[in-house]
Image 1 (cartoon, rainbow, N blue to C red):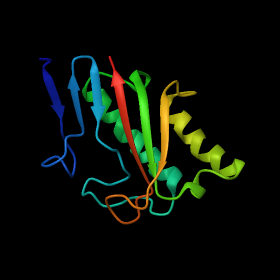
Image 2: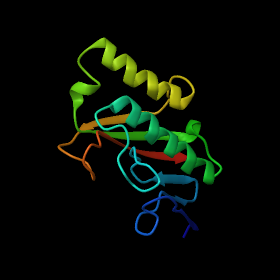
Image 3: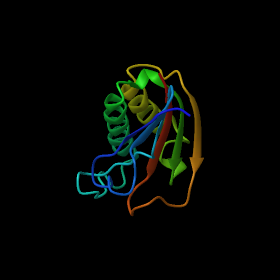
Image 4: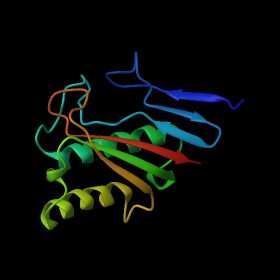
Length: 133
């Protein structure tokens, strides 16, 4: 059985691991836009929320000595598809922020899933990733 490495920090560390590594696979819990007290940041702005979530993902990966380039798959859970899809301006802003987080065009598999709500009021996006090192 592979050794399990668990990383947990931040406002939810007592009941949610930020990430778990077993062998060469790192699975991160869903990243959302919250502050150090767990309060929602950037309510109503999905692009800013995505930037905050991706920043958290990068921070967790760093603790595993991994980078955004090690991500193979991501799932985006979105409460309002019209905030990122439907017109070029919204798509450009959102996918531009995503590319910025990855340092260029992301070379990852992706699922984009619409949901009715997330864990806290005001959250519009939750990002889950799987990385391989």
